[in-house]
Length: 128
Image 1 (cartoon, rainbow, N blue to C red):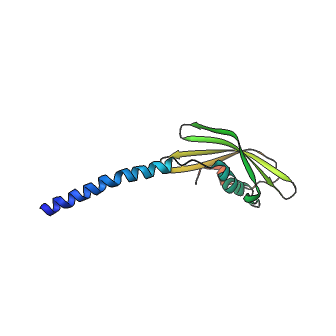
Image 2: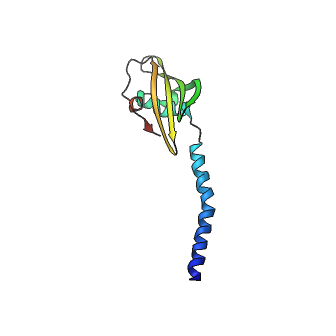
Image 3: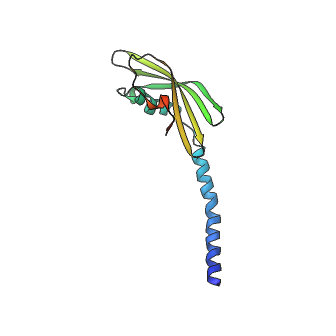
């Protein structure tokens, strides 16, 4: 009987010591800042224009991040070289986070390219 009590005490002590580590890890994942410029170049631009090289593109934030509830919105403008001329696309990146699940969606405000690929991020929320 005393072995069982000692075993339960060890288990309780281990759980008590591990709980703060688990809570801190979850909080740090949720608090990670979003790299809107990086997302715009690597994920959004390659989705909208698959033939464009994201390394050659430049992006800048044109409107700072605003938050309403669990959704943050940032306006980004991307400049890139197309087949014929230099193009730009202005878009809003919406990020919503519920717990550890982070999703994004894109609203294209303006695009100077003549052809735009079909991108799932424009219609649906996608995980990233």
